[in-house]
Image (cartoon, rainbow, N blue to C red; front, side, top):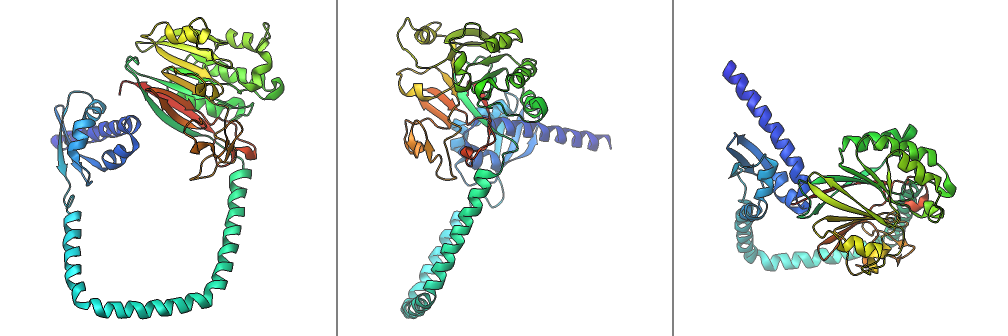
Length: 410
């Protein structure tokens, strides 16, 4: 009984270790690698030295071993050998399909003339039926399409968004030290998730970030909802350092040296950046954080130029409410986090944004339009968050978004 109990306990522990490894790989590896390999791996056995993994897919295992096995080893805890086994029946589908095709071709040669005559007659009968029913079919199709569009628009544009989606992205850098997690909040626009934003605060805490950044338009227009934002920031500073850059809704404070919001944010421990840089250390990585207020000047004497060129061994993180400036400069920092666009106005599934006020119609068809998601240039990254505002038809089908960015060496 003791041996059986220990065996069951060890296997249960192995399954838990495999579940943790699966989550790490899903976060670090490209989506197609997770789909073609990780999702089709099954843990057969594991001890301290070796893991036996059964593969139920049909892709090239050698490709995975050469390029991505080191990530799987890391996810399983470090120096561990991996033995792969093909599941019964895996890799045989192509052979069976080929044999079936060969048999069909042989049989088809015998009956080809008869089949041609039958196909010709059937095609004639089908054309006659289509001619008789074409008008009614087209009418029903048009009515059904109109009804579906009306229902879809009602759901997409006018039902309020009750919660936010979480988007996980990763950024690779040799300057990332032991790696760290950033949670980005943007464009809350004075709205709330639960009383005093308790839902938002609780979820950010569960994500265990090393750094929290706010990329503007957190308050409503006309200096409204400032107390709510102060309460949110006060609670978030208990989880991780908080950095804040102003957006359009805070823009009337740019030239106000006695800005009460800036003073009150700094009083509760929030770092407010006005075209300036601060340096902090996160898990062994030196990170320079720059908060941009508007246009960027690339000269060596400009604040942005100094941020970009000083301390070249530091990871360069820029917070900029609007992403547009990235299209006007040559050199990007390692990572820029932006918001403002709300993912484009009246975005649709499969099409993306239909309109964005800076880029115009169908902006996501333009490779130099930064509307939503992750963009790269010369090894550097821009991430545009769709924001947390949840009301108003302008959101389209874009769900309010909380952005989670993991910076590491993989």
